[in-house]
Image (tube, rainbow, N blue to C red; front, side, top):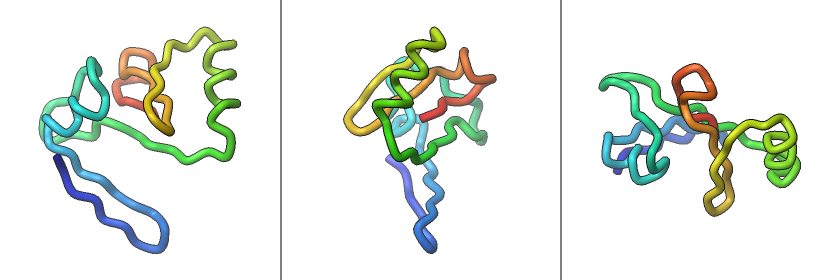
Length: 79
């Protein structure tokens, strides 16, 4: 649940609390209103996953993405 605004290939997505919970199950969401996630693009997702693993950073995989919980990133989901 939410809305996405895209301009020139860049986008901003605003999620409802339910949309946040569905996208990142188990992640603690920030108080509303607040920023809850930073989503980055990469060229090689397998390399990112390998680097996170080798660095001992806990992460979760979902279709086409990997994310790190707020407890490990200073308070926001990083995907």
